[in-house]
Image (cartoon, rainbow, N blue to C red; front, side, top):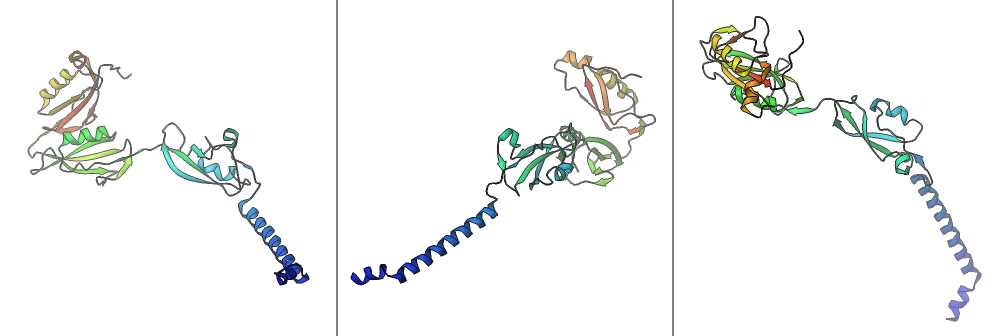
Length: 265
């Protein structure tokens, strides 16, 4: 024990302990300084308000702030300009009272004006079925008829911008789809009548007077039989145009409304 006491009280021990303490202090200060530099300790950068700003302007807005942005996804809103910031995280400092450090990424969600809808596979489906599916998905459509012995009344092709479009592809809502429909060989072409403004019964009678057609009336705001009798046609498919021909036996779909208001001449 006496040897230990003598060593502890010796000058050599004191020098060694002093050297160890100095090294420890130097390491501690170095690590602290490094961490401060790496974590930007003490920085308080205000998060700007990006809501309502356009995505194209964000880089300029964040210049000299040390902050960056990242677009997470898009939100469908046809009323806003494409690329308008709808949400941001973190929220602006003036609202959240939260400040950030240099290099922080502000995540945003921006608006888009076109909503994508999946195109159904309508080939070999009946025309009536295909029309219902397209209406339900808010696609516009027009019809073209082709003589067919094997598939009269069925969809032979579905086209988008003149090219075949496969089922499962996503298209902007409201896109125009062209359906090529098989027409029974022997059907005679006749002038397409204008059914606009007629009641459903009047339209049915007019079609019978010019040929044999499948007539499909639709009135979404009709709730009673009286509504259906009084409703007048606001649109038809195929759409009417002067001189347009249609094959007898084709399907003509009309949209009627009980709140019909005639278009000004």
